[in-house]
Image (cartoon, rainbow, N blue to C red):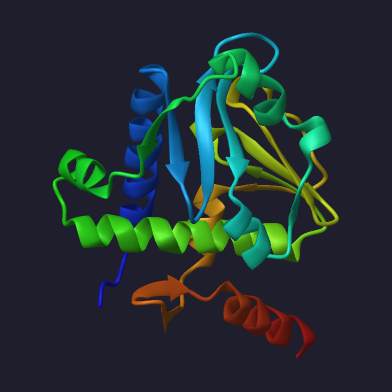
Length: 195
């Protein structure tokens, strides 16, 4: 059982986004089945890492991908010309080496962060989640879209990955790892406010 500190989450997220940039700069498409697919698109106004949440992620959190406004869907054929992309799967070993830590710590950390992102998107009807170098994910109702790094837009409620990490200061065991339980924290804040 790994207990992951806030600083470790931040380091894992930063190493993950660096790895994503390095891989996509080589013209590869990254496939992370439990989270998303992504590639780098260099033409304005969609310049930056472009991602599309995976079907399994969307289904798990009751979300719908908005293809009509998706820079991923608009630019995939432009980028790969209808051909097949070189697909790279998530490589936690490489990320762990960059951090000089255990692979299982990176796996647990990313799994927990992906769950936290899903929880935030599914519990907010109008939210802009800033993923740093991975751009922003916007949710309106249950419809979700992503805006690449350099074309971020403003939403009614903005959340950052750092705030996701900070919200997770209580833990419970889930799927072989430790995740922080933000609902308990929110319940405690509510109880204090109503007393």
